[in-house]
Length: 250
Ligand SMILES: Nc1ncnc2c1ncn2[C@@H]1O[C@H](COP(=O)(O)OP(=O)(O)O)[C@@H](O)[C@H]1O
Ligand SMILES: [Mg+2]
Image 1: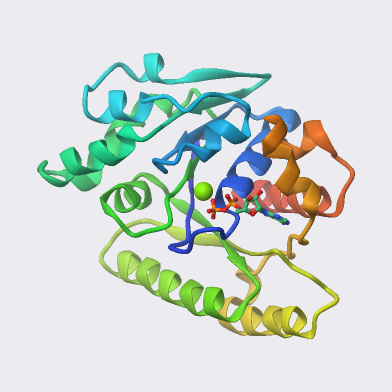
Image 2: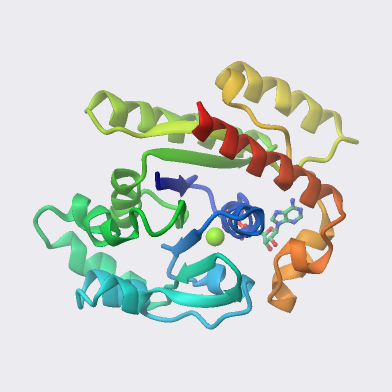
């Protein structure tokens, strides 16, 4: 069964792209067939995999190019990418004027069903038309949240939006809230985990530690598994990947 998972949070710099690339690559190494979808016009997901941003999302949504022609190889076994670039912003404008726009991405990604075990969508930091499309296309959401006050307030707001969508009949479920940039030395971070636990209960995943090596890896076009697979952030992401797999097994 294919799992469509959105990695979302309205906040920028929350660790969305890092989480998408890192657990996507981990799932691929583990043996799952994985498609990463870049929904952010900055094209960071491509860059962090060492690939050039390309207008493939635009081709898929606006030119209605065949799905297979929009998926590119990443040079890694079991891992494919549907890249985006600055034209993603134009795609959003086109979508905004279209009827049934909320279903546009879900429909365009239909051919991925059965071909990939995991379709991971890396969202932009907003709640624009494309991110709503992503929530319609996804059944599950992973929300990375930096362990700091304002980000935690934002996380509560984002999860309320998801609750609202669920009440309106959309089948989308928050499966993991992932504390990112965790620094166990600071009291604020330790307190932050307590606050997140109160808010999210058993949806709260183990924190991903702040780790310079995971910030360095994209500069080499490498995932953390190719750069420094033995580091604190890599350990955290391996645990997260196992958690995501376990949720699917229920
Ligand atoms: N655990 C971490 N420790 C240190 N730096 C991190 C960590 N996670 C992400 N980063 C860095 O923080 C920046 C923002 O992360 P990113 O994944 O791009 O966030 P988003 O996609 O939510 O905007 C990037 O430069 C990334 O390399
Ligand atoms: Mg990003």
